[in-house]
Structures are given as structure tokens and as C-alpha cells.
Length: 458
Image (cartoon, rainbow, N blue to C red):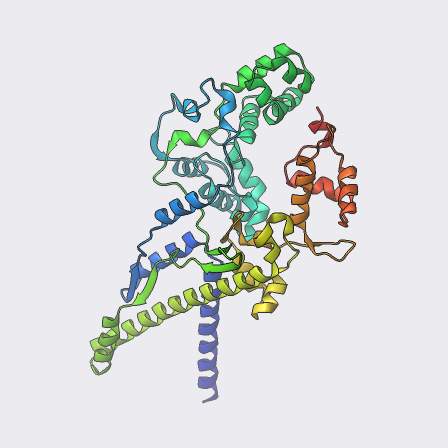
């Protein structure tokens, strides 16, 4: 009797643990991963009814594209290199292929000799590339926590693939990468990088001598570098076809309404509706009264499938509820950010949010993974709203991300004609009551991809 009780208890505990693991997995899945999970479940479970929303994924993507700016604006990018100032002229001579960029790169990946973890991370990053072959968000934010250590190797592998110049953040980085892959190196590559970063406006306007002086070189070399630049492709991924453009579809939205109040919305159109076919519930009742072997087997089969479907529906409900609760706490804790922008983001830990909604910190980490939030200032990974605090003299709570935005503003609004050193920026932050040592400023500036004062003053 005791053995039977232990066996029953052990089985029940294993079942609960299995369901808990499934729920935790569902919390961490991105929208696309979860849709795939639902599709696979539906293929093996006849009890499940999947109802696609009237608003399709592509329609949602198109709507969000109209409403929000993409992370990369090309208004001041493409026109520098052509005579007719049209981006389309860059596309002349390019052959549109039916093979998509992702299909092409995944094929290349399969031929590379990478370890399993790096290859898996590279697969994820390849699917995150936009149609230009660029990362719309930082690669580290596109993978799960345990995959981040493999990102540098995975990015390096992607950047070595054809077409040259992919796996970077924007077309400027792409041009420099292409130059490097074509053999340019050392001082010449540094000069070319400075040309791409700082002197395209002057070169486009025909101010070759001015550009040469700013670059610290002669007119002949400046012209040679500019001629070389014209042989490169600013958007290398576009030579491949695309069945559909990949867009980030946020699952949460926190925006101001007409009265200026913040409104939290859960995007219920991101996932299909999942239901249990009521006819199977009736069949299960009928087979319950059929005591034949076939009747018992049929009842057991239907009961298991109904339980599996119910479990999936509970997981989806818990995921949506946790996501919405997390959004509500973020709306409260990061209120200044949602009202006024990135420079007003507060330091906030996942533990603080977990304490507010009564769950473990790991649950918040999972729900923040691979999910996005739509704001009046663009679409952000939910993880971006969590950041360490930076001390201030007056006790004001600044996040690391907010301090980085303030540093960006200080550099961009500098009108002195002389590039600000990291120490000077540190002193200017101190005047605002923000403690950030010179080394910290240097680190944040590198993370913002802003050159040193020496490079900026050239």
C-alpha cells in the first residue's frame, strides 16, 4: 500500500514538473516560435481547432511599418553615391532571385565547419536579418540568454558569407566590411572608414579638397577611395528575393492617448485562437459508456488529446497574463520613458518587476525574451527596459541606457567646433549630477558606436 502511494505521488510530481517545464518554455518563446509550436501541436492533435485572426501577420507588419519608423532610417543614407539621387539606381543590374537571403545564407551555413552551439546561434541570427542583410536590433537581443556567448563567433561566420557586407547594423558598416573583405586594411581601411562615416556629404557635393583636408590626405587619394566606394553595394541583401519582408510585430503597446494618458494594449492578433473541438468532448462521453476494448482505447485517446489541448491553452493564457502584468509594471516604473523618451529611462531590475507581480525573477526573464513593445518612440525589445542604475548626486534614478542617450545628445549638440573628450563629457555629466567616470563614458560611447574625440576631430 505504501509502495503504491509512493508510486502515485512520484508519477503526479513528474507530471506536474513536465507541465511546469512546458509552461516555462512557452513563456520564453517568441511570437513566431510560439506559432510554430501551436502548428505542430495541431498537426498531431485532432481535438485542437486553430482559428487564424482576420488580421494576418503580414497585414499587422504592414500596419506597424506605416505607424512607426524602422530602426534604420535611410533618408540620409542612400543618395550620396549616385548622380540621380535615387535609391533605385543602386539596384540597376541586380538580378532578383527567387531564393531568399535567409535560404541562401542557411545553405552556406550548412557547409561551414562550426560547432553545434555557434551554428544554432548563427541560424537564429540569420533569420533576424532584414532584407538588406542587416541586423535591425543588436544581435545579442535576438537570441536567448544562454546563446549570447556564441554571438561573436556566429556574427563573424555570417559576415564571412556571400553576399559580402552582411551581418552588420547599417549600410555604412556594410561598405567598410566589404572594403575589408576585398583586401583593404591598415591605414587605408581606417581612411576609408573615416570617409564613409564623415565625408560623404562633402564628396557628394564635389568638395573633394575639403574632404581630403578633413581626412588628412591628398585629393588624389580621396578621389581614388571615392571611386572605389562606387563599386560597392550599400544594401547587399537586396539581390535576393523575399517571399515576405520580416517585421517585428510587438506583443505589447504602451502609448499616450489623446488625453496624454498612457494606455497598455496586449496585441491579441499576434497569435491564432486555439480552441477544443466540442464534438470530441461529446465523443469522449459516448465512449465512456462503451466498455469494449476499442471503446476504452478510444476514450483514453480522446481524453489524452483533450488534456494536451487544455494544457496548451492554459500555457497560452498564462503567457498572455504574465506579459500583460509585466507591461503594467513597466508602464508604472518607466512612466517617464513612455512619456518623454529614452533619456528618461530609469534603472530597473527584473527582480523588482518579479516582486511586483508575484513571480520568480526567472519568469520575468523568460517573458522578456524575444518579445517587443511598441512605444511613441519606436519599437523596443522588452529587455531594453531593464537596466542597471547609475548614481546621481541628487538621488535621481538614471538607467545605463538613459545615460548613454544623454552622452549621445551631448556629443551631437556640441557646437564648439572641437570634439569633446571623454573626460569633458564626464565633467558635463557631473554638472547634471550624474556620476560617470571617464572610463565609463568611453565604454558607453563605444556601445553607441561613436568614435573617439581624436577620430571625430579629424
